[in-house]
Every structure is written in structure tokens, then in C-alpha cells.
Length: 92
Length: 239
Image (cartoon, rainbow over all chains, first blue to last red; front, top):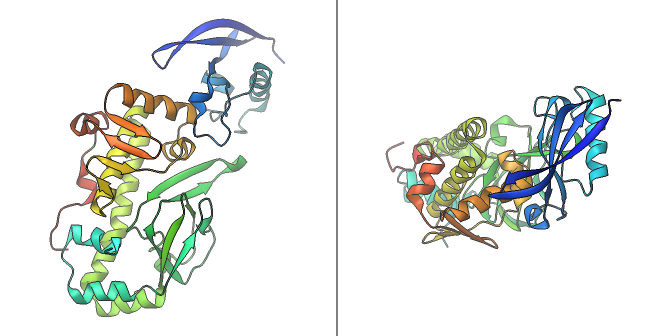
């Protein structure tokens, strides 16, 4: 399992900067996460605030996975990323 | 209140009194389906077709992990499964998004209509052709338009479809669809749906409060959505 590191970064969404993180696996960018408010998850079955996968690369990207639901915390987000890095073509 | 199916068909061609009577008499019963209940299920082999009289419904399919794609949205006047008359087995489900009033039209009655009313049969055929045209348009929008353009396109289409059946008040329609349901329709996450709606609001194109959607700038909204209404076959001409 490659080492996962996070780098804080501001992500431009919604016409403004959102708190975000670059997620690297063994030094390669695999995901960009941003903080979303409850307002942005309005009309979802469960309206929560948390972390949203703004972009994914490789096994975390659109060629091999589908956009996951908003994660309630960073640990959940990283757990998903780790699963994707190990999973290959299984889309969950 | 005029049967919305008659309004929908009369937009596209004249119906004779006999044809209108045949459609009214084709309804064997009216039932109510509550929101979030299936109207028809994948795998069903119904012996009647369901006509939506009131409410909103969604044609959908589930894939692994319970993810859902909505392949069509239905408004009053739409047949939810006219094609089940000929396709026999449902390859997808239809869900009530709101409380729906559904008219049942037995397949035996539809068969009699095809025997006795050739023009009306062509109008029913036109109905399924329009469904197909909408699917093609949605496919193009989903594949090649930005999410914002895709949403603009969908809004233009739903507004016109509701207007045809008398459900528009000026530039405003009631659209009781959640962001999650819009996401399942457009192939977007709920976060993206909210952002896209925000963008359209910010640009002064729509106002969306509760279920009420008002189009503020029709020409610009059409431009953003690359929308032309040709595929809806809205012209009245001999069919």
C-alpha cells in the first residue's frame, strides 16, 4: 500500500475558494478533495457537510470509478481512496 | 379539466370527437400512487398501460450498489409505459416522484384502438417516437454538453412539455424534483447539481424556490443549453 500524503490547497468552486487537499499516493496526485457545506448537498437523501471528491486520477478517476457520495470526514475519504487504489476495475 | 393526453396529442395534430371519446373511454380506472413508490417494476408484464394524469414520474434503472439512472422524466399527459403493450416485459421501472394519479388503459383496449382508429394509432405511435427523440437528445446533452448547459437544456424541455399540457403559469412551472433526482437524471452528483443551479441563478437565467421554477431569460437559457425544440415535434400538422 503506497504512502498517502495530503497537501492543503484552495480549490476554486462556486466562484470562490474552498478549503481543500491534494491527495498523493507515493508522491503521485490521485485526488483533489474540497470541503462542502450542507447547502451544497441540499436535496440529497441525507444533507451533510464534509469532503467532496472534486477530481480523481488513475483508479480514483472517471475512467475506473464513479463519483462517490460526500464523505463525512477526511478519514472516510482516505479510506475510499485506499480502496480504489487496491481495487482495479471494480467500480464500488 | 381536459385529459392531459388529449392536450398533448392535440398540440401535434387535430383529433376527431370520436378519437377523443375513444381515448376517454379507454381508461378503465384511476389509481393513486404515493411518492417514492413504483408505478411499474422492471420485469413486470403488465396487461395495461399507465397514463400519468397528475404528478411527476421517473423511468429508471438501478445498477450495482443501488446507483440509479433516470432515463426519462414524465409529466401529466405522458404514457408511462405505452410501449409495454408491444414490448411485453418491462426492461426498467417507473417511479412516482410525487403523489401520482394514474389512469389504466388495458392492452386489450389499445389493441381495439389499433383495429378501429388508424389515425389515433399513428398518434400513439408518435407518442413513443417523441419519447425516443427525447432519449436521443438527452444522450447528446449528457455526452457532450457541460453540466450547466445540460441542466439549462433540461429546464427548457420540461418547461415546454408542461406548457403543452397547461401546467405553466407564464414563465413559471412547478418542478417537484429533488437535487438528488436531478443528479440521477443528468448523471451528476448532488453537489454538482447544486452548483449548476447556483450558476444559472447567478447568471439571471432562472429563479428556483422550493418547487417553483421561473425562467427569467428564455432566449439566453436556450442559448446556454443549446436547445432547439424541434425534437419535441410541437408543430400541429397532419400525422
